Image (cartoon, rainbow, N blue to C red; front, side, top):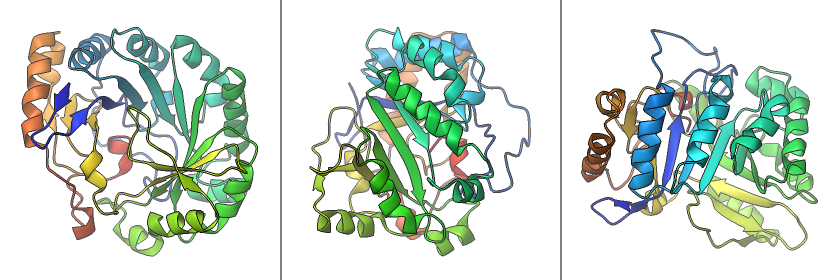
Amino acid sequence: MLSDEIGRQFQYLRLSITDVCNFKCNYCLPEGYDCDGERDFLSMPEFTTLVQAFAQLGMKKIRLTGGEPGLRRELTDIIHLCSRTEGIEQVALTTNGFNLETHIEQWVGAGLTALNVSVDSLDPRLFHAITGHQKLQSILRGLERAEQLGLKKIKLNAVLLKQFNYHQLDDYLAWIKTRNVTIRFIELMETLDNQTFFDENHISGEKIQQYLLQQGWNEVIKPPFSGPAVEFYHNDYVGRIGLIMPYSKDFCAQCNRLRMSATGKLHLCLFGEEGIDLRPQLRNGDLIGTSEAIEAALFDKNKAHQLSQRIVGQTRHLAMLGG
């Protein structure tokens, strides 16, 4: 199993397959995606080498991200590749859901085991104000279809925004009263491109945590391969609530994930530097060389990010690596 110098073990890979996104979320790409150069994303043979290398190193879960992974026409093939690779037990997808309604059946058929969909408001007008799109009803129909197909691990992601959706917490709670879905509130994170917006809209996830505890919610024991979210259950609700609080104390102590960019760079932290280029090994189909480069890179993984000091590394926006 992959581990770093302080004993953290890594069984979870977040694999970006494109940095292109078609939404204009006000906390990430308010002006839309800016194609400022050639995009030479990993090919299917390169994905094959990469996934096999990580699997042989003990990786158990792969989450496909973007940008918006649904824009990559090979997405179904990539899901199938991951699901049939020996050692990979979970294949998850994080998406804005723009084509969820029309594609969820083929994704599940290819081996998808978990689904996270960004739904930053349950109010169509506010959803449009945040994302720039009128897709909420289609996304909700796609989520319903995913439930009908028997997908057990379905989560909604909502970035907490003081001036937008913060007051809708009770609406989200009412929505999961009878639905077996987890809603995860993600604390707004500062990037190089959103500093003014961050100052105006950041709200601590710990404030939501205290509210939930006061309302009788209880913390869930984390299952294997889970991410950094703290989850809560309530005896009167079918669904659950998750909180991702990157500014909380010791957030990085239980880190179990690594990240790959869509162009073949290994990132040890979302808020790190440029990344380690694995493209030469991947282009040559060098499975051994890829594995050795991954193992060597872990010696340089930092103990923690420096978000609380407003140091965000080279992260211009969250679409770069899929959050």
